[in-house]
Amino acid sequence: MSGLTRIATAFQRARGAGRAALLPYFTLGFPTPEASLDVVAAIAAAGADLIELGLPFSDPLADGSSIQRSTQVALKNGTNLAGCLAQVRSLRGRGIEQPFLLMGYINPILAYGPERFAAEAAAAGADGLIVPDLPPEEAGDLEVACREHGQALVYLVAPTTPAARLKQVAARSSGFLYLASLAGVTGARRTVAPGLAAFVARARRATSLPLAVGFGISTPAQAGEVGRLADGVIVGSALVDAVGRGENGGAFVASLRARLEEPG
Image 1 (tube, one colour):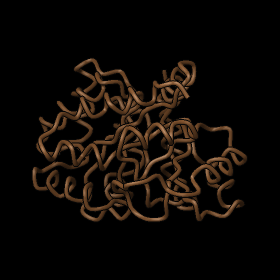
Image 2 (image 1 turned 120 degrees about the vertical axis):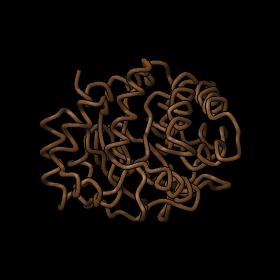
Image 3 (image 1 turned 60 degrees about the horizontal axis):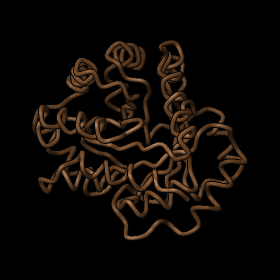
C-alpha cells in the first residue's frame, strides 16, 4: 500500500466514524531521541489518526517559539535527517501503523538529495512530506521523487492566499491540503482564528482533497471547534509544550481525540 493510499484511508476511516481526523505533530529527537520515540508511540496508542514527525532544522521559519526550542534541543542531541529516518524505521518496528508525515524544511532535503530522501523515507515507512518553505513552482524534483515512491507532498495555504493561488496550490498538493489557520507561525493560541469557517469553505470550493487545519490549535475545545469545520485537526506546539513540562503526551492526545468524538 502506498503512502498516498494509507493517508486517504486514514481520512476515510475518521470520516466514516463521523469525526475529523487527528494529526498530532511531534519533533523527533526531543527531549531525547529515545524519549521522542516513546512519545510518538504513546500518541499513536492514544488515538492519533495520522502523525506528523518534525525534522529538526536550525531555521524553522514557519514555527513559533515552542517548536523552535524543541528543534534546537533535538539538534543539540545530534538529530539529523539520517537519524530521523532511522527513528521512523524504529517506530514501524514497534508496530505503529498510523501514516507518518515528515514535516521539515527544504535546505536539508536538498543537501540530502530529493530523490534519495524520498526513496529512503518511503523505505523507512514514511507516507509523505510537508515542507512549509517549498512553493510548488520550486518543487519539481521533489514532487517527481515523491510520486515515484508513492509519497504525498502536502502544501500549505493561508487565509491570505488569493482564490486563484489557492486553487493552483491545491492542484499540486497530494494527500491533503494543509490550511494554516492564521497568517503567522505555529504556536498555541487562546482562541480559534476568526474567519476560519469562511477560509475552510473557500478551500472546499478549490479542491476535493481532505482539508486539515493547523497553527494555533491548543486545547480540546479548540480541536472540537475546528473538527466541526475541517477533515483534519493538527496540534503541535501545545503537545510539544506539554511534553516539555513533563506531562504525558499520550494523555493530552487522548483528550483531543475524546473531544473530536463528541457529537455535534
